[in-house]
Length: 334
Image (tube, rainbow, N blue to C red):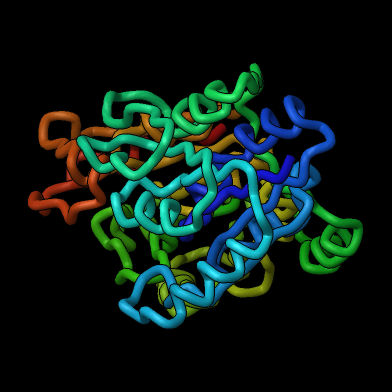
């Protein structure tokens, strides 16, 4: 059997789908299972032991109107002659693309009525964790998985690099002020706790801790600004110094990780670290880390807009995070 899994991007979504991949591998130990995604997110599953191959494409193929690029992607998938296609994106265009592949069995989500092009659908919309939704797709083919642990495999080389980066730094907390940025869209600033609050928090964290400011290359300047505003010595800007798997190993060594709802939040969850996650327009019941000791803080239930998550719409309300205070985060730091 040959199985294809298609997901356009978003590191967090792909990481939350790894229990689903584990379920597939247990159900079909001898199958070829391939993952098709954009280059932005491919590293999240690059070393996943439950996959045979990861096909990474230019992200613009998924997020632009480049017809010929889409046709090349379609051709690449067709020539693999898959038996089953799992479509992890929810938009109807993803289902139409799946239909165009000619793969007979196409399993995906039905958000509203957008799953019309799939042959088998899982209804999407009610409030439950995204990991559970992905596992629902696996159950369609008789695949089951009790553990919701996110998989992110770290190599020996990654461990050695993190050894060098953290040499001489002890008792550290990881903080991610940025994140919440995906290809095909601007920074989702409404999903970030304000930088001013991060500065206030860092200045109040007990001096016994070192602070590692984490994130990708695009977070470097934000972290630099925060570092310059913080009145403490043991603070380091690690933005852009590690790839996804190295970040996972780095977070594993942190006493805890503090971040907003973002890709790094899911990397922290994969590491097994205690995570203090800060939510605004998104509901923690859908995405919060499930690791032991983790805490999701949310003060905006009364202005929550479900369509922001269900349909990916921009929030109309601009008052998110205003009621989530620094003190409410501090009480969870020993």
